[in-house]
Image 1 (cartoon, rainbow, N blue to C red):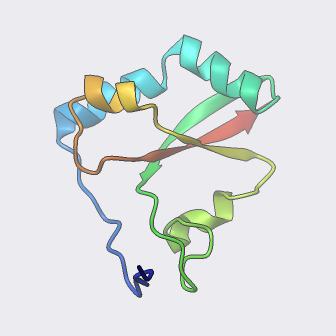
Image 2 (image 1 turned 30 degrees about the vertical axis):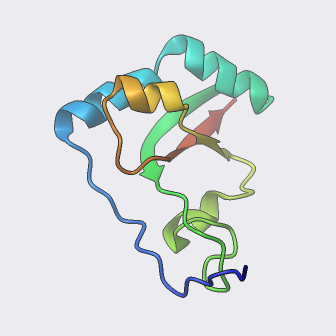
Length: 107
């Protein structure tokens, strides 16, 4: 069985306003912020309200993310986390099935 190489993957998406608000509330929950800051070994983090859908790795997307988010990958002041599946479910977001969130490290 061979591998299918994707040359282009459309990672764009749009969330319903109520679903986005619900997800943002979960991503800014104090307990989750503490967990993210602890895992990223910093004092505090702040949700940037930037979300993206992971894209398949390819020659044009070697980091598995849209180009506009590559500047956050490996940047010492930012951390990218997978949105927990239960957050997606609680916010009633089923498409896309996966999202990543960008946090800014503070202090």
